[in-house]
Image (cartoon, rainbow, N blue to C red):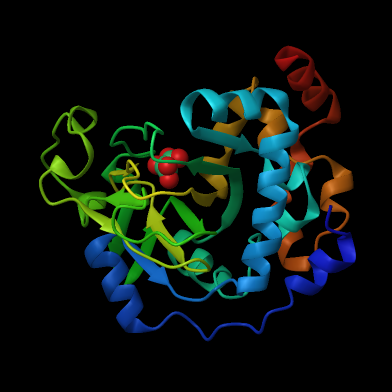
Length: 278
Ligand SMILES: O=C(O)CCC(=O)C(=O)O
């Protein structure tokens, strides 16, 4: 288990310059951006170790993997402080502020998939009406960040995206199209340490893996403060989204600001959520 001090040290990467006009233009055009080398190989290794520990030590997760060659973990920072690293990461935070406005961290999850795993179908979290660009101001009310802990080369089972679908006008039955048979769809390629930022209005999916080995990506989703309230309607999972005070106690100022909505969640509600799940 990573110590709090190690996790804090690991989040002290130098701040990135402001989002450039070219990046804003590209994000508005295609609905996603890929940032290179956000995590160091050492950080990827430490986070991946923690993922593998959880996948192995939680019996239901180990069983999932044995059966489906695919496993999902949710509420990551509640499992190990090393999962704090992507929260308000200095390379990513300027984009969250620029594209969301008043971003707050929603759910955090991890998906590992091997060649026999069955990736999900095409979907999006929010309709295009939740994306806008007016007078040069981009607003994606929900912005996801996909953190590649292993390479996402073609065929590795990475993230599939339909560029520009964050503002498409004609819908298809997205989930009916297997993998890259969806017209216009592509893979978001990257190496371990890269991050794909994408509007949750963009149609996307996990792709099946055709190469040997495992692909592991983390997803940290962010919503504008007025949309994050939707989490409060999901009582069954509220205790997963909202971290208890002892987790937030170890956060720096930016991480605290990005998770401020969690202070509105009463510990009794969290306890009720845990009890309902048990
Ligand atoms: O990487 C994946 O397997 C799929 C990610 C995704 O689309 C999701 O979790 O909503």
